Structures are given as structure tokens and as C-alpha cells.
Length: 288
Ligand SMILES: Cc1cc2nc3c(=O)[nH]c(=O)nc-3n(C[C@H](O)[C@H](O)[C@H](O)COP(=O)(O)OP(=O)(O)OC[C@H]3O[C@@H](n4cnc5c(N)ncnc54)[C@H](O)[C@@H]3O)c2cc1C
Image: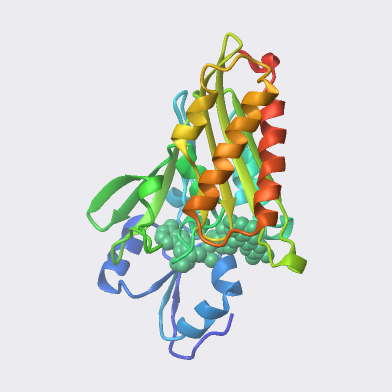
């Protein structure tokens, strides 16, 4: 990263100092792992006259806490740290998502908060967190507020963050889903098709589907979820009948095609494969 002679890099060691400084200089750039800031050409052009505040020394922002009901992850916890939590501490679907999101060498630096706060873009993890009903704790000096992940970006793809405000923690509710899946397909540059991800959550009780949610993620800030169509699966007996699966997939892809402009046929085909694989993997043996 090129540093302008006038630019200052600060590394506060507590959250109060960081928030007090950001209140005075809200135009400063917050840096967590620095992996996006360092790799974004657009960012490199605009960042020269901004002071940088690096969060890496603030323990409070890296803390991870788990209770029976939720997992709370500090915004500056790295992917690696979260992935390597004990198996019973982290939901399998979240681990899968983090493993699949960034290449191995980047994981030790990249943070969950950094992924969620990339301006004007939402990458893989915001739709994932929305599907899980995660809540975000945002803070500026003297004020905290809590926001559902679904409300973190607006229709213009802007982040719901005030000047001087930062993401402090992500709270993921636990205990609701007894099957979680996350699968990602790499981009196909020959057809100009970006990477895609499929995220599915199911609650099964006595061999019946009680709750069912899916998100299909394709390229930055584009994803699709339709609760009404997913509701077709509620009450299905396991294993799900092929006809019901096909019906659900046809309706889901039709809705995706109608709601989003110019979705490549290859994207739809790949989602068909991912959806079918997911629906077939929901077996009676997942029952509690
Ligand atoms: C090679 C490579 C491949 C990648 N592939 C994928 C992919 O396939 N899918 C995907 O989802 N992501 C992908 N990423 C992006 C990666 O997930 C992000 O770079 C990373 O998560 C950002 O975290 P960071 O800590 O490095 O953020 P930084 O680069 O430090 O910051 C990113 C942005 O978030 C802001 N920010 C950081 N922390 C906070 C906070 N606490 N509060 C408010 N704002 C904050 C910063 O100001 C900056 O604007 C890839 C990255 C690389 C380098």
C-alpha cells in the first residue's frame, strides 16, 4: 500500500480512544485486516489524504463470546480465528462459509467486520448473515445501536453507517437450525460468470421439515432469497419427494430470473445443480 507523506497511521489500543478520534476526524479510514483496502485499486486512488486508524490492537474488537443462544464475534476477529474455534463453539455452516470465502493465505488477516463493511458492495457474508438473522452492533462515541444484518445496506447498496460509526460486533443466533449448508462455485471467466454461493438452513423435527431458508448469492451485492417459495418445503416429509424438489427449484429460479436483470443462463444452471444437491442431502438422519 502506498503511503502519502502527509498521511498518518494510528493504532489505538482501546475502543474508546478509537471512537473519540473518529468523532473528531470522521473522514479517516478505518482499517481492520487491510486485505480489501490493500487490494482495491479504487481505494488506493482515494485514500492518500486520509489518516488511517488500524483496529488490530483493540482486544475488545477481536473478542468472541458464545452462550447457549448466540455467538458474538468481534468485528476485527480474523477468519482464521473463527474457523479454528472448537467444533462445538461455531455452527458448521458458518465455518463452511468462512472456509469458502477467501483464499487460505488471506484468512489470517481478513476479518468478518471488514467483509461486511466494504463500501458499496456486499460480498458473500452479508447475505449469509441476513439469512441467519444476525444482528450487528454499531457504535460511535457515546451511542450504540443494533441493526438486523438485512438492514445494513440500503437499496442503493450504501452501508447503514453514520460518520464516525463503526461495526463492533456481530451476533449470530444459535440452536434453531439442525442442518446448515454453504457451497460455493468458482467464477467462470470464459463466460464472464462470477463466483456463486448457495446457503441453506433447515430445521427438522420428527422427520418433517419445520423451517427452511435458502439464499443464492451471485456477484457483489446481488443475492436472492424468497421466503414464500421456500415455505413450500415446510411440512415436507423426509426424504423430500423429487417432484416437490423440482417444483421448489423451478419456482425459485423463476423468481430469481424475474427479480434480477440479466442473469446469465449458466448462473441459473449452476444454481439448479446446487439447489438439487442441497435438497437431496436433507436426510431423515438429520433429525434431532
Ligand atoms: C484474494 C482475495 C479474494 C477474495 N475473495 C472473496 C470472496 O470470494 N468472497 C468474499 O466475500 N470476499 C472475498 N474477498 C474479500 C475479503 O473477504 C475481504 O478482503 C476481507 O474480509 C476484508 O476484511 P479486512 O479485515 O481485510 O478489511 P479491510 O480491508 O481492513 O476493510 C474493508 C472495508 O471495511 C471497512 N471496515 C473494516 N472494519 C470495519 C469496522 N469494524 N467498522 C466499519 N468499517 C470497517 C474499512 O474501512 C474498509 O472500507 C477476497 C479478498 C482477497 C484479498
